[in-house]
Length: 288
Image 1 (tube, rainbow, N blue to C red):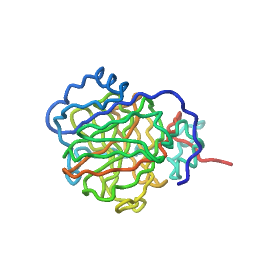
Image 2 (cartoon, rainbow, N blue to C red; image 1 turned 135 degrees about the vertical axis):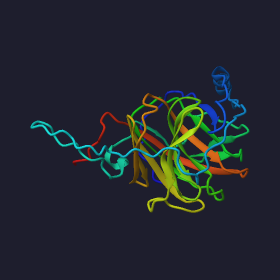
Image 3 (cartoon, one colour; image 1 turned 45 degrees about the vertical axis):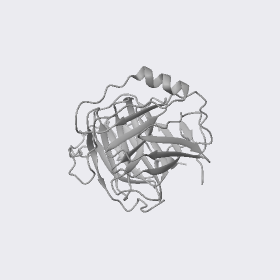
Image 4 (cartoon, rainbow, N blue to C red; image 1 turned 90 degrees about the vertical axis):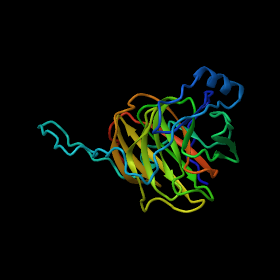
């Protein structure tokens, strides 16, 4: 498996685990101090969630806003035209990442094994197993706190899972109750939602795209540009969707999530987690 060029990262990471699921009642109270103590002692934090996630085959609760805006830019003699977002693979455009984890060790992560999920790092892969807690989304994150970025990872589909099971990246997670969930479903759809502590609001509805590899054990590289409230979604280096959402504009943690749509367990294999910090709304392609 080809690796990206590593970016040095030696800071010890504090990882938190969370379980959430939309639609029923306010989020359960989580004692963060207990979670932190559990993390430091290597014991998984556990609690009983009280929500259920929106089925993927229901209509989205929100219509994604069009991106970029349809209004014409004001023309002035000195203004340069605003470039369109490039459709090239960001990993080839942006150069070396600001953070890269090949999972050759577990320095950036802690190990969890609770009633919702388990994770471990072995043989250069991050294994995350959903234990079949029907309708529950669980995630785990490291200590990175990032705002505007392009983040990507490679993942391998489970050998067997239900169509609505889904898995992927959580980012801009300011606490254990909120964050953006970006991932793939077991039947090959891609979607983006905003978990606000009580429910998951759809930003990009779950949909198929020819760029997504489908089937048991299929391998995909998924990535997302997040700048302010604007999002560009990529599958295997291809731009497949774009939208806006202004709910979480500050810094937040990054990590992985799994969602089980039934009582069946499944395991996802993640690899090559990387992010690039973005300082501009649009980034230019290489010129050399």
